[in-house]
Image 1 (tube, helix red, strand yellow):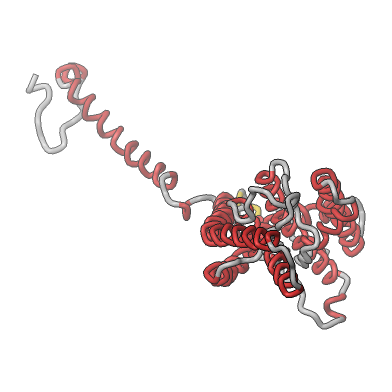
Image 2 (cartoon, rainbow, N blue to C red):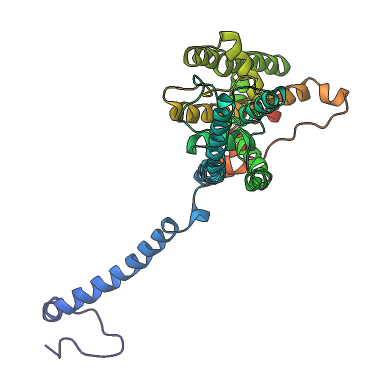
Length: 359
């Protein structure tokens, strides 16, 4: 057998008889040489899948970052609610005890002087300004600084609505309000801007493209789209919530609810109508959380409406006529498809507002 398979530096292919003698080792060596590159290539294929967020698709990365912003926003509200509740609730309870003591002293007096009456009324009004009432029908065990109420206050603080129905009682609460708002207001605007950028294509650019396909000129399509969007915002974020507030609050009329929605979403916040402020409110915590979500989504839609109006003014030349800056196209690189895919650019797939107006 050795004569049939002579050794050397480059041995010739073994005959069938020699393959049978060294077949096991030959097959094992051949299989190892063939499997080796496959293992390397499989590892190379797994590397992008096991990478960090930077290796993700731009579209998924964009929505992941946006979800993280929104989640951090609600965590920020929760953190503010916990701090405000821990700082203000003991002071509020002490104020309630002081008012009750003052009321008992006033009732025990046999002859009330004008000065004592003025002092009592002044103390009652001061306590009422902080949400503490002395009347039996207004008093309740519910605190104005429980967790959900404190989160509601933090929400009105960072959204600049500021109803003024509750204000910090302690000096530490006032200092924390300043620091909390300095960080929270810009971050809230950033989150709202990021959300609006993601909504510009499906709610603005795509409907305009569809209207132009139906034969409308660019400027007329922009006007029709803005009117339709305005009608939807009025219906979904003013009229429908007004009906809900009229049903839940009891003492509010439909006009009061509509008025509250307008004052809130325009960030005026007069504070003459505040939800969940009625004593004995059913499901108060759930109601306050729902109002916070409504304020966030409503402010986002109002910002979207303003940007749509600004872009419509650009198409009609109003900003140029008034020498105002044009509404620059937002950077949507994170929300687009790859630049080149199957020989087509992403700009040919997803229209932008400015590209529609130039056609």
